[in-house]
Length: 295
Image 1 (tube, rainbow, N blue to C red):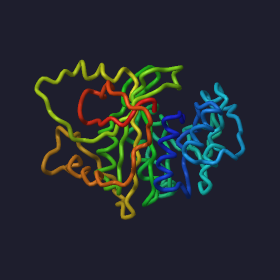
Image 2 (cartoon, rainbow, N blue to C red):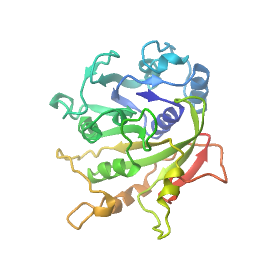
Image 3 (spheres, rainbow, N blue to C red):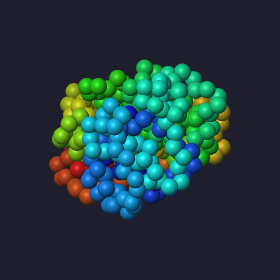
Image 4 (cartoon, rainbow, N blue to C red):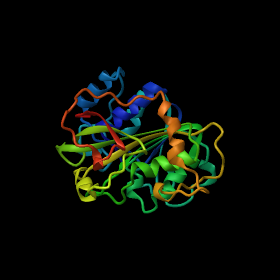
């Protein structure tokens, strides 16, 4: 599980919209794959203090390969968070043992103000149950921050589309759902790469001449989705299951239409400085609107 520079910027942007506070659950101990100097640069750009204790990660599988901070000390930049981590076993010394493949224990329902998944769902066998558990464990008014693979590449156990996340949170009547995707264009290694950033939406233009092979090739192999979902204060106990957009019938919740209410959201996309006039749109559809490059 990890936090790269893209995810950190995503989290800082969300905190600037609505400050992080209360009980925080990290699904897995997070490897921070950001070198110390770049971490400080990103924090300064986002007007965060760099006056904090830097404790180097010597434990997590990927993080210890960098001159990077451990996750518990990184989250101390959010002054009002109470950090806990969970995992299916104690091999990385997580605080709580929770198997996301199974229904979460009742004691963890409606417990957390913020839950972060950074590659957790794309590494478990039953990601749908994992997503349901995230929703159940959130307090009413709580937020899920998720970044997961949306295209298969080496090391990914499962890949999940933006639609998959958006449909679930929409049918469960979240107050707000916002989805962004980023595609890697050049890499230093498997954790460090520059990306193009896009905003995702469920509506698109249908074309009879659409080339599905060309569409798939446009992603270039590495595409991730970043989701923020805010649970309603009046959230119901029963979890609803969405229907894939092509198969929505009159008796189903039309989540595509419902998603339109999020168009008026005051959440802004993460800021990106570089604009590329020749950018390749993911999947070559107008589900995606271009935000910027070198994100």
